Amino acid sequence: MQAIVYTKYGSPDVLQLKEVAKPTPKDNQVLIKIYAASANPLDWHLMRAEPFLARLENGLLKPKNTKLGADVAGRVEAVGRNGTQFQAGDEVFGAISINELGGFAEYVCAPEALLALKPAKMTFEQAAAVPIAAFTALQGLRDKGQIQSGQKVLINGASGGVGTFAVQIAKSFGTEVTGVCSTRNLDIVRSIGADYVIDYTKEDFTQNGQRYDLIFDAVGNRSVSDYQRALRPNGIGSVAGFTTLSRLFQVILLGAWVSKTGRQKIGLMATASPNKKDLVFIKELLEAGKVVPVIDRTYPLSEVAEAIRYLEEGHARGKVVITVEQNSKT
Ligand SMILES: NC(=O)c1ccc[n+]([C@@H]2O[C@H](COP(=O)([O-])OP(=O)(O)OC[C@H]3O[C@@H](n4cnc5c(N)ncnc54)[C@H](OP(=O)(O)O)[C@@H]3O)[C@@H](O)[C@H]2O)c1
Image (cartoon, rainbow, N blue to C red):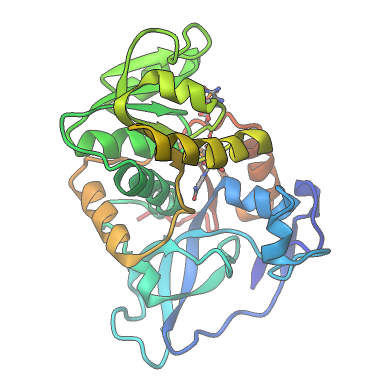
């Protein structure tokens, strides 16, 4: 089969489309014929081994797992010996666990526990756009953010892969949502349900006197004192991303101190954890039309390097999707 592989860390130039062995499912896995995948910042963090700590996970000098791609949607081709939940022909979607990846390929094996049936009305491209970004939004809002109906919620980075899910998921919890994005994305953020939008090129949400119960930051470019200023006295700041290592460490260290000594809670959310319960929860939101994936661009498998290059610029509008076969629409 064809797959994107990389044998050394570096820019998207290290990514190559190669002929590799088709995988065989383990007892608890299914083999999926992939029709679409999607790219996440995780892919370029691993590809570049940035931050350096990524090397502790995936090899100090060169990558141990030479494949990338977590989010996939496709058709079950074979079922492992202990498989009970799916059968050949089922259309499924989900995220491959971070230690294995391999979604930028024609086939991948994944445990049944990480997959769900694809919503029938969605295309493979739409379904592949969902898993990691939606898990991040859901877990960041619900688990770290303790979101509750009636709250005032601000989403920083509302127009990105994670942000477009965060706006819609926060609305589904019955909150009032303010989305922060640049001028060109104001309309799209409004169209996915934000009650208010703030153009970060014209207004600083931490300086306008508004206070929020929950700030979910899908950019990670603000200081702890910025969050403190924009949060209500017992508000929560749930940070998903970071733009520099000093921002990251400030949120971890100073955020922990602020959370311990005051009523506001500010900190980095845990790495998004793919799991069936949340995937089914998200699937129900998709089926109810409460969440609709926003797709910015699609690239064929042979152009994953271009897709990652575009994502790395940091201005994707929704998700960047990889199509693995042209006639993959349902
Ligand atoms: N904790 C986890 O497990 C986890 C999982 C997934 C992602 N993440 C992290 O979450 C972050 C977001 O991921 P993503 O997939 O959403 O990335 P993405 O799709 O690349 O995000 C791009 C978006 O960020 C917006 N943006 C850039 N600068 C901004 C600013 N100063 N203020 C507001 N918005 C700004 C851009 O809007 P404009 O074009 O309008 O500037 C664009 O729409 C990344 O740092 C990623 O590493 C963490």
